[in-house]
Length: 457
Image (cartoon, rainbow, N blue to C red; front, side, top):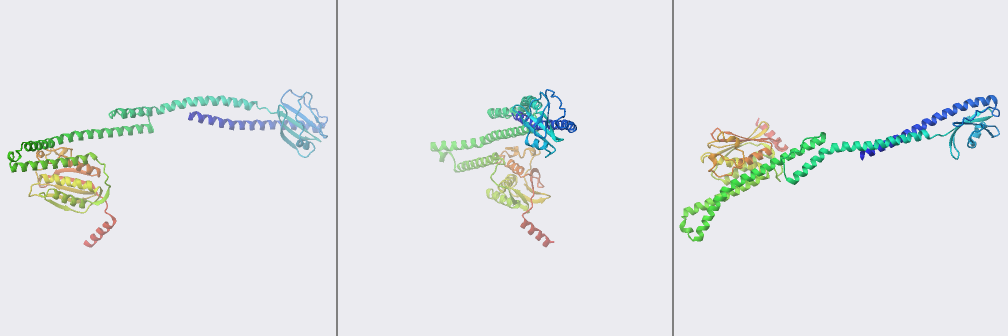
């Protein structure tokens, strides 16, 4: 419809302009012919006199002539149709007031173009019936051409529109199918060109991201169910044992004080592990979704706070800090959680008489955090999977933990544009290293540091 309307408007405008040009051209040609004929008749009238000049016979159509005598009367060829009465302006030309006059006159049926030219003591007039047939024929032809163009334009426009929108129709059908079946595995065929192809590629990328998200969600649910099964079973058995002995009234006699204390301690440990696992699962399931805003912070403050928190949770673990001020842009709580997980992991392996060493320094354009222990280290076969969810080395099966701590570290580091790696420390244990992009410190601190450096030199 848009194409047909545009063509119709174009044809109409073209017709109006062409009609005006054609009418102007025809009238100009007719006026020139009337002037030429009038000059011939005027020359004869001046030679023979307007009263005696021989008027050409009427040819039956086309040109008409008339002589205006000094007294205002007229002479016309025999058999010629009557022209409109002599106008006042033409009479003044005959009286010598002006040299010539071009005017249009209308009779009852025909329109005339009349040219009056002074000749001798009168004037001669040559007229032509206005003929609109060329313009009418031209208009009829333009109408036929316009109708053909409008119909053709509508058909071509519809074909082009349907061809161009066919990929959109298939894209819409595919989107409706995905919404109805929840099936994210079928990609939309990559077809079309330009913006449509980029749209299809973007939707396919979105479907791939949704597939990955659903797969990760399913794996997380399956792994969580597997990991929760063992502590829940152990907790349920211990509670059932206590309930059964209590119902029998043999709780005090069946279990010694030492056994009861150990059982209650086991229950507390299992509840603590479940609480930790639930918290880590919640944190991991949230992914990068967080209400915490990114801010400019000193990573040394985060490391010190995490070390203090680790010591309050496990007082037996000693943490040796060697940190310098390094500024980064990040989320404080997330970074503190990642550092705490690194320290907790090292504390499980480090011997009681060997502290967990935590070092923070600036290296190039990065903030480098290293946490190492004096434990047995990580086997080469386990290194590629250290940061996987729920992965626990065979040697760590007996130790408390969920296998999620280092995977949370990996997620936090990735969200901050950093990199986490594992190696063997100089003390023979594991060395976990985190590299984060460093940021420029706030202006007052930068100026103070520069002043201290100048004073030191």
